[in-house]
Image (cartoon, rainbow, N blue to C red):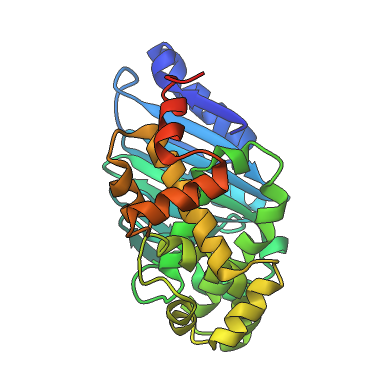
Length: 318
């Protein structure tokens, strides 16, 4: 993350100005109205960057955010924001529409027109700022998709939510050098979800094709712990043949079985270092039904047994 703010570290009289300054200088020019007293006001902001995509993770007491007509007219670099609801609820208002968001839902809005964001019970939302030019959708499509709840009913909503959540929560991406590589498939996935939402097959066909590899890998991560994870199951969920699945993975130098085994071992290795669960239980959680097979696979990958790794991680071995 590039910048963070936690108002509990500030004197109450300074909190509102600090939030306004950070948001206006780094995110977007808006009017912010806090519905609690300065002493009760609590806001945490964490800013990051993923290529051209700005990320702002926000938690706050009840607030209303408004982009006025004047501020919209002054916009020199048009942006589209995606508001991802983490917990609680919110309302996005633009173009005469209201989108009521609950956890896992998202909506977009455009900085070239006025909008309001209503957080009556507080904010727990991650905002993604995308240049209009990068999104590459016609103005009419952006307008049609704005202030529309995207959730159940959109076949790409769940995948997009999981992808964006993982992106926002991964400091190695937002704080490291991997952001630019991730930005393009992120925008493609968002474009595909919006195109599907407004029902424009012409707009969605290209993004759906270009994001297929991203969607397949996200699916494999989602079902990684499922012992029935297989090429046939993944291909069926994406309405493609197993042969085509292997072909698109091969273009990324990925072999299905190797990727699954390596990813399961990496997750098991992480869990062994964090918990005192029995080794066999950790292995079963990540698809290794047989404890002996798990131990052999782990040793082949890392040169030590799962128990030895746990001891090293706990600092009991030199």
